[in-house]
Image 1 (cartoon, rainbow, N blue to C red):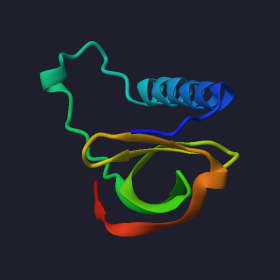
Image 2: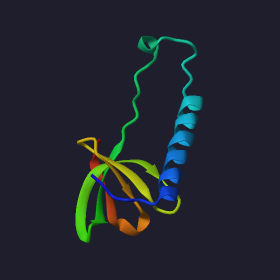
Image 3: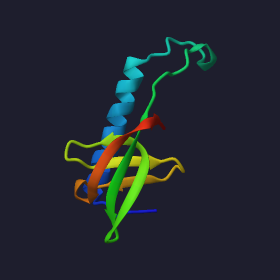
Image 4: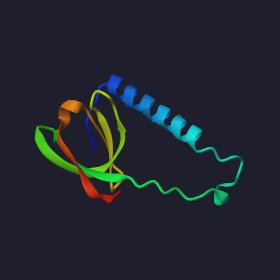
Length: 101
């Protein structure tokens, strides 16, 4: 799978995931209702194509951005479930696609 990001990069992305989860939980409280009574989520996630530098080669990846750090690092999930932790220097290009994840 993978790339070998620095421990600091991993820590930053994990912290960003925790903060994002807390924000989502605060923005969408369940009010004590069972899950079956909660309205379905209508959030549509956009697909992106990212060209990354991996092991000295250009690697085209298509998936959804789970986390994006202010420094440009991204955590990308491809449609097969693979998580790619890409540092900003590895991202050679990216563009949104006109289809949902």
